[in-house]
Length: 403
Image (cartoon, rainbow, N blue to C red; front, side, top):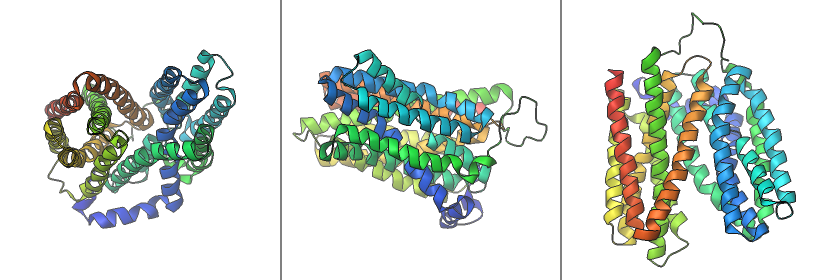
């Protein structure tokens, strides 16, 4: 992946993005992925409210997450074969229909039917973020570092704003409206993203070998090994995110601030967004494996600090420190994934990496929450450290494989 700093300033690289894709594209890709952070929580809130059972709500939310983890790579593979436009539009129709059906039937149908509808909503959730990265790879190799940094910052903001928006709408209006609002965003902005002219730039997978393909960067076994390392790294990143959320929530409760956990995590994400934007200014001499390992070590050190922190200011200080490395780590992993894609297969790889993060978040949240319930926030933070160490080890293996 070419670093724009090698030929021009980071600011110039960011300024080039609107001219490449247009402001309409930047708006569509930003708002189109917002429902990904809204739908699971909206389903949890609505199912719990309508049935009076947090257990039913939890199972429905889990079905949504599992459906997304399965549906994302399937949709990516289909988009490689059929094109993004067709797959995204099918996803829009199915997802909006399933959300409306869930709103109309929850509380009046057997719990199994509600869970199935929740799973369908997750299965059909359009993966705008990964597919947008695929389009940037097709639009410009020169500006892909800046484009991926932009994508990373949008992801950070979305995962802060989305859950907050669900909570605000559910309280001010109703839980039903919060899920319908996510469906409306999908209907408007994912449709805009699907129909945008950039969809035609993405090459489709050809069943015949292409002698002129220029995107195959690694041969055979080495490419598969690299892909496995990226997927493992994404899973570790997800565990880091989930365990951080659980640990900060538990720490806030222990300090008599039960509603501040989300705010603590938002502070962590803000630091991540800032350093992600600054990544394009790093010189090309600092290669991807050095960035990968360095970011993982920084995350581990931040996790150790959070584990030992006795007060809120200190835990926030180390949370910001760890967050300053999480965005660059994620950006680097996506960059490595982009460097090994085969022509016409970028969709499945990018969506599969996204699924790795989703699964990791689920594991990290569940394990971190269970650990915090028995041993306090420090247990959840120790999982943050373990995930970071694993990420560093995977980076070291990747450097050796590449050589």
